[in-house]
Image: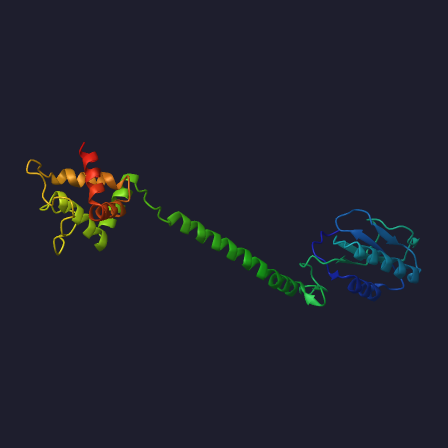
Length: 273
C-alpha cells in the first residue's frame, strides 16, 4: 500500500457523499488506518444497504470522537473467479482506494485538486487561521505594549540621577549663610556686630547702606585693649549657626539689648566671666 500523507476527502459529510458515489453494486469495501497491514473495518458482503449503514455509523463515531487519523477507504470486487469475497486482507484485490480524514488538520487535499479543506462554517483553513489570528491580536498587542512600557520604566529608573548627599556641616552652614542674606536679618546681625566691631565688615555680608545706631546701654566702641579678629568672628558665627537659629536668636538678642539693657549687660558679664 502506498504511504499516504494527506486526505482526498475530509469532513463526515464529504466522506459519506464520496462513499455513496463510489460504492457500486458489485463492490465490497474495507477501511484501513493508514500504514497498517490489516483493515480496521471490512464489509465483504453484497448487502449494500447494510454496508452503507455500517459505513455511516463508523464515520459518525469518528466524527464525534474528533478523530483526525488518516484512513484509507478501499473497494474490492464482491466476487472473484474463486467465488464471493468472504474476507478482506492485504492480499485481497483492490479496485480503488481513497485516503480520508474525518477531522481536518488543515493541510489535506480536497478532492485531489490541492485546495484547502472547507472547515468551520465553510471557510478554508487558511481563512480560519487568519480570523483566529485577528481574534487573538488585541490580547497579543496589549501584552507587547505592557512589555514595552516596563522596559521604558526600567531604562528611566536606571538613568535617574541620584541626589547628592549633603554633609550636616555643609547643610547648616548653607542655611546660616542663606538666612544672613535676607535683608531684615542682615541688618539686625550687622547692628549687633557693630556694637563690638564698628569697622568690621563680614566677608559674607554686603556693606549696609547706613550704619546702625548704637544699642542703648552698651557702649558702641570696643575696649581699646581688645582687637577684633575678623577670621575668629567669621568662624564663631559659622559654629554658632550649627547650634541655634542664628538669624532669629541674634534678632532676639538685639531686641533685648534695645528693650532691656540691664539684662543684656548681665548676659555680657556672664559671657565674659
